[in-house]
Image (cartoon, rainbow over all chains, first blue to last red; front, side, top):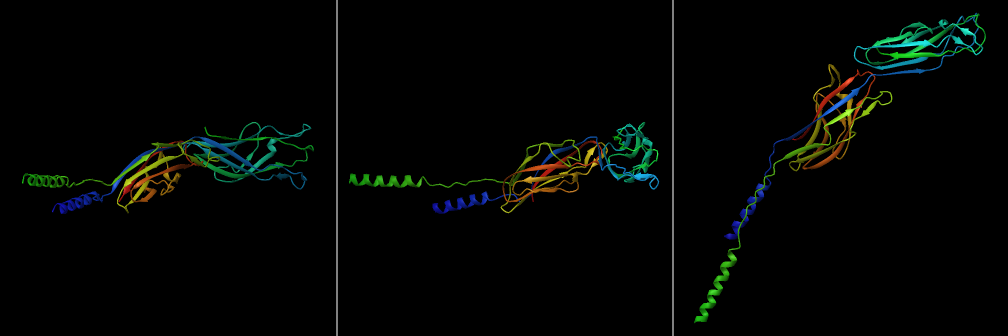
Length: 167
Length: 161
């Protein structure tokens, strides 16, 4: 009799050990994610502007190769963005001869916001494009130089400075 | 005659002592299902960077160590998900949470893209156990993002249906 009772007690204990709940267990944990987006600007110019020697009689104007312009601006919503260009002076040769910088003009094809045309100046920055808010803007500028018989022979050069601003 | 009686008494005493050592015991142990998740960080930050040179910004800290502890039925499924409670918000300006993605290390862990509309899988396992892995967040850095400091709450959920 005593041996039988001992076996029953052990079986009962085994059943209780296997009893587990079947309901879903949920644990949650929150974290905070923060992204800092600061104001930034970048101008990328690709290409060179060269005007080959040509006969002014047959070519009263000379077109240079296209200059790719990319203006990148990260600003606040509604903030104005402007791109300008200004020459450092007139075209000047090593011999001291000069070509008026106003003889240099350009045409633009590309994203909305670029001015279609412009005339170079050394006295004041000239508008190239205007936008509102952040964005990336791309266009190709084609410069044109008046080919005048009055030019003295020589190799002329000038520096053009592009400026991207957001007031 | 006296000697015979003494011998009989000795035998009887020995039988009683052996029977007193037997007994029964019942062991009761309650093991309910449980789940616990631990994260090595309570926040992650994506610092400002130039989108041209850094199109994907790594978080600080770089890795989050995740520890998942679950006690379930032998074939019970254990899942870990994460969901953003809102868009990335800076005042009234928002960015979609899908700009944040992650990669992982560790068995059972999965990479993904953050969402506000539905929880995204971070890990899945079968049965009870302790699982440890790491999660590495990235933020898609664009020139078209308006400036600001954007934040959102990410909720990790560990479940065993």
